[in-house]
Length: 160
Image (cartoon, rainbow, N blue to C red; front, side):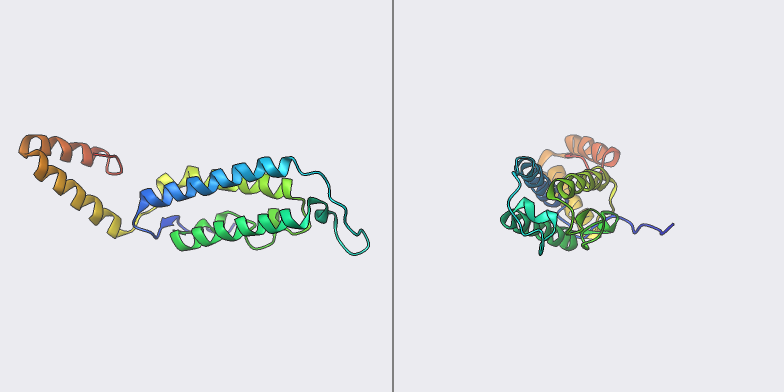
């Protein structure tokens, strides 16, 4: 069995990455509703595969969402390779109907969303969090600052 690469956020703005991933997930969810309503389009059975029954416009839209998602992942999350199919194989074979492809993509994104809270974050993220904490401590004073620090140590990724 091949060792899976560690999941690492390469963008120090963890909150932004999570929000953007959630936006993409919502786009995929909306796309799944569109795909579920597809009425087969006519296609030339002599020259085209059954996937063309989804309609070339829908196939194009899927490819755009796919590219957008892959670009986001490549630019912000290292080790997302456990999500199979972005390479035209697996669930994204071009001979599979869109309802199969979208269903599997949503499943893979569910896996990623569940895994991200445990992903490593870059050192710059921790520096940013430390600066925010110091600013809050200075603003609140020593007593309240000590409580803030205590909470931050107990839950470093929290909103303390």
